[in-house]
Image 1 (cartoon, rainbow, N blue to C red):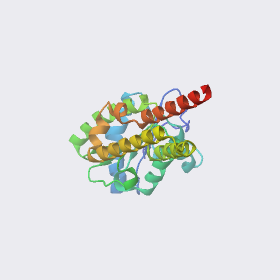
Image 2 (image 1 turned 45 degrees about the vertical axis):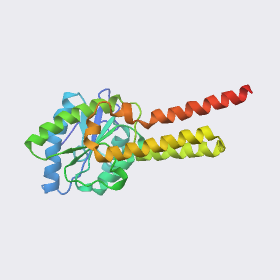
Image 3 (image 1 turned 120 degrees about the horizontal axis):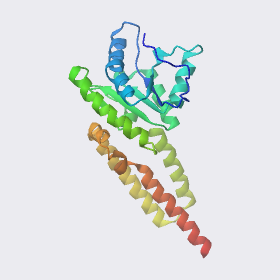
Image 4 (image 1 turned 45 degrees about the horizontal axis):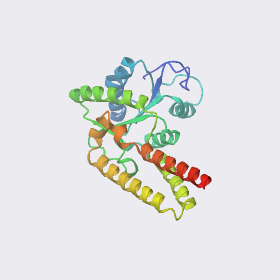
Length: 238
């Protein structure tokens, strides 16, 4: 069994921690063997090189409820890496928890994994489960971790749905404002184009260090926010 130092399950140490969301299967099963292979050959050395503590669900040795500690780590660790290979239900649930939190998460999956519709456009690093694939994954993952931890504005399906709901509320309040409606339509169009582009070339986009610069919808949302604030100020002056 893989064990880590997990006396602090909430990631409050000065050293950053990364929780690994992964399919497990029965001990000595093919699923466990492949999952542990990725952990030991890729995740552990990459995280160690970045001085980030790694925590795995089957490596938690602290007393208490393991499911509770898993959720605590998902919510509180600075980073989560989710292995979507096999589309394990527990993995999907834990990924949703992290998405709801809105903090950095990196998804990886073996080539051939067909992602569910809801996350098909999300940034995912696909890899080949062989010796050469390990080296490629290590290099890409290290770059992605550095980007993810620097990115202060996260983006995921839950986050986008919440922001869109708030935008729609703003539209209702500003009904009749043709300028605002035009701006919102442009944002919708941009979002659709980004989704299509991401689905067509997911891996390359996630591998680009300029990804967030060009595809971060927070920029568009900030434009809307500034627009609304300016309109309110102008109305007050009239």
